[in-house]
Amino acid sequence: MRERIPCSVGSKPATLPMRAARGAVLLVPAFLLLIGALRSTGGFSVLLGLGALFQFLACGLSFFSRQGWREPVGPAVIMLYVIGLSWMLVAAVGLDDWYLHTCQAVLLVVPLGFFALQCLRDSGAPTLRRARQLAHRLSRRSDWPAGLDACRLLPEVKALREALHVDAGPALELLSHARPSVRVAALAALEFRQNWQPGQAELVLNAARRAQEPEIRAAALYALANRDDQVTIEEMAEFLYDPSHGVRLAATEALLWNTENRWPWIRMAVRRCLSDPAYQEDGAMRLEGRPLTAEAVAELTAWSAEKGCLAVRAALTLGLHYGQVLTAGRDPELNAELIKQMTDSHAPAVLRLVLARLLHHHRELNGKALRQLLDPSAPAPVRLMAAEALMAEGSCPEAVTALYDLARLPNREIALATAEVVQRRLGVDMGLTRGQPAPPVHSRMAAEVARRVLAWATQHDGGDATATAARGDEGSWNSFPASFS
Image 1 (cartoon, rainbow, N blue to C red):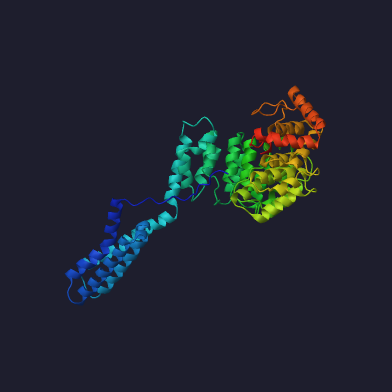
Image 2: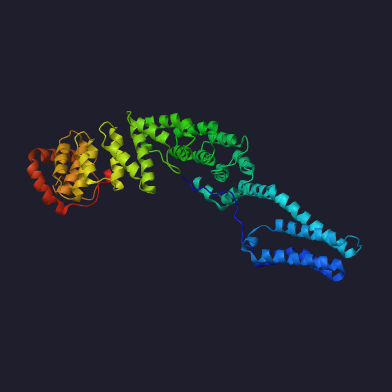
């Protein structure tokens, strides 16, 4: 899944002039109280002197605290000035001194100004104004990258994304722009947005439905990836059967990264997509983010037992899911469950093949499990993979016997794969070029290789094969066939 960029803007480190200005503002109440104490006499001067001492101590704590420099200056100013004003009011009771009145005015007006600025900043008005300015610049931009996908990587798009954490309105206003590059940039600035106001998600969906460009439809789906209401999710699921492969991929990433709440809403759309022969070349549904829920895994497992491309794509998707889980960390219980499914003769053949390849890739299959896969009830590709793995570890008569059985099967694809293993592990020349991919199934060379494999199987008995295995391992390769990786 694409990188999710947070909407908040990081605080900049304070420079030396900024620190000096901050210190000067915080020290004003202390100096005002100190000057007032020096000008007054009697008990009033003592009271003002105590107030000045308190102010100096409070400012000192702020200066020597690292956290104090990172916090906004507004709350500290308001607190110190209000305390100073209170001290001045108490000390000025019964006195008619112009200095005290002036200090009271200063200690009242300054915190009110900071409070007003704080309210303005909290309202988001400055950020919204900056977002509108950035959106206007994008709408007036003339030099755009040649590809629409490159538009989302522009620095202006990143700046706009950071300025939209208050309101998405400035970007949504660009969705009606005539230039596709502007619309892609606006949608890219909204990628994985979490906070939407009523009606805004519908505007993005309408823009996706109207767009002729696949890049715009994909960008709209990424913008809505964090939505969790049923209506929006179900409408997004319609793009799983979009004519564009890129849009289907974007819909898959935007929907399946979190199936905890969404699966009941999208399960039928996922099934329809997996079962459509028009999309069978897409293979496994790409999974990013959190693993699939137990409910989704159960559904995909059931679909892998059906016919057609639904079974194949469901099994491949399960393999991708289990692969992510295994990569994240070893889980003995999951490994045991996967081995149980893989060796179950009643499990779907395509799922057994996917699990066997996956577990072998993660080195979770021991010799005992591999020998179980040599059973004639196992799918032919699974038996071939197990035979290859066992022979890679050393001489294995059971694996050679399985190769003889596989060589006799009337299937040219199996014959080519078997010939590759026999030539690599047993050193028997099957007419294949070392280091080159297998010839096309319907070519003359493939027919000749299949004929040689069948002749090899019919001319040798088990005893000869065992002897050949002992001799052939010396010159065999240690690499695993690419078609079974």
